[in-house]
Image 1 (cartoon, rainbow, N blue to C red):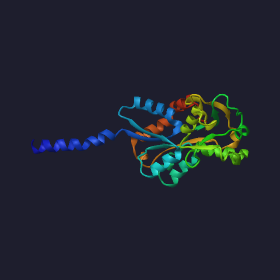
Image 2 (tube, helix red, strand yellow; image 1 turned 90 degrees about the horizontal axis):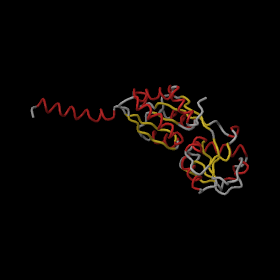
Image 3 (tube, one colour; image 1 turned 90 degrees about the vertical axis):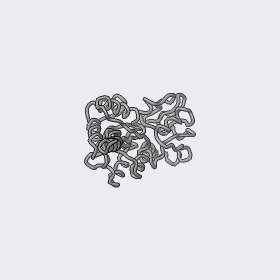
Image 4 (spheres, one colour; image 1 turned 120 degrees about the vertical axis):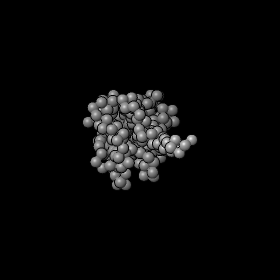
Length: 248
């Protein structure tokens, strides 16, 4: 092989990794967003050839910590404002891109037959699942409601902590707990055996808000910026509404 041909082979080999990753978007989203984000990303990928999504779902706090520790992320969707503020304080999120993506509400779900029609009834149950408040926003909202309802002390020894809101719902589905505090969208779309037993009155907790933002890395990627603009579109809002999320 002559020198020119050899040089061309080496140059082509060096370009391969770049071509393979040029259209990748690393998307970190709260676990309760899994189904709707899957649909949004699938729809976008069908219309934009070459775009590949790498998705990571979990508790908002866990995701934020992973990004802080160097995990590659282009877009972050949190289930509360606190973890987006954390990202902002660590200079990991592009301030200019922070916006509200959607809203949700908190419900108590359990298997049919569980006697619970309101917060005052929960204290009579034995085991109640909530997401760990240190990293799971659904757990934070639940604890806030307990305090405002004046039942937090009565529930201290009854709570079963989970790693995210989906695991919380799974426990209720299996009957491993009497019920679980989860998002309305999860109970409507993902639950198998568990049903919504009551909605937590809004005055007891802060509105469930999903902020989204480009990370500093993502703000420099045309692919990520393009998908972010799609998430702000009327088409995206329509998909969110079909999944039970509020967009106003």
